[in-house]
Length: 155
Length: 336
Image 1 (cartoon, rainbow over the protein chains, first blue to last red):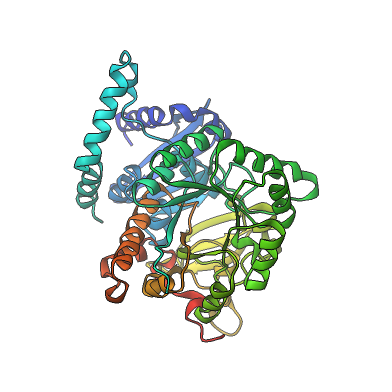
Image 2 (cartoon, each protein chain N blue to C red):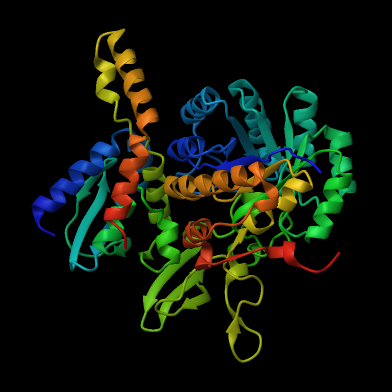
């Protein structure tokens, strides 16, 4: 895959996994390739010092393969990997434990979209957050967004 | 006749799944600590101390409960790991612990008399006499029944049980000797009761070959799936074997339990809770299953006589299922 796409993937992955460095250290040095089967692209990466880093093309410990759409569905948490695996839409070859461990690390990441608000001076931050929380609950905006994405990425 | 609406108990292997369960209608969420004190001891799965406290806070704020699975069997050399886990559960304010080992049940009952105890499915208690024993000795308040009883046996057990009864409502099926299975020890040296896992990930290998996907457990070929054939988990019990000429599922088929069809009967007989399997699954699974079962339970509660299973419920659940199909399991067996 071209260096720009790899850099974007590595950057985003490290942002999402920033707090999971202690878990990732346990996978230190392991090499993984993600193959986007319908695009014919392969993304090589590895764990280096508890972070995701680009890896050279070559031997890997784990191979993950799926269509662009399915890999997007996984990344957006619209599907769980077991579902796609049962349906034969996801391939996992090599050291299964790396894949399972990495999946569980990703699943444990509690994405907090409100993190920046926390840095606002009290009592402004909590109040804004409560208002946004309430607005989301009333409008069900999160569920709607989920359904829109789900429809757009129907297999 | 009992009009009580059963609680919906959903699984969570991490904080996002716990939130998904609470947000999508679970009455209680069951979790495990990140060690071998529970039957889903997978790398990176489960709750560390911070996540547990945050999860409890999130659930309690929404008026929901957190149950802790401590359902493996401690050995002599690691006994204190389990007792420490019980003590931590009390400190954290867990609503109930789910346990199987009689020694650990005794520890919890004598050291923390206020702690609510549920009997785990791993205890494999299948008769009301067994439940009476656990109730008298340790004061258990609820029992999760193994998925081995026919409906007639289930009704008989509920009618005579001294404690509340929780049954599995949806999810992957275990081989029919739940809580007593040591089949995996034969090939991986590990078993669910002792190690909290039957097919440890380091023993599992998949390979895509010209003939299909080959699943191996410790190097032993346990199944081969053709190009578009739906697959399941790589457990020994769900492999295909040759006992004659053709390989077939000689022990257990890869399929999921789904009790939507018999929900009104479960209501009528006074089931206390319906449990969803799958702490190893991702938040997307938990959200979808919780949403469907919440809707089904509410629909049934409002008018059990006119309750009908909606086709979209079944479609959503089948898509998530092992083997992409479902069964009533032992419930539809004719034996008494």
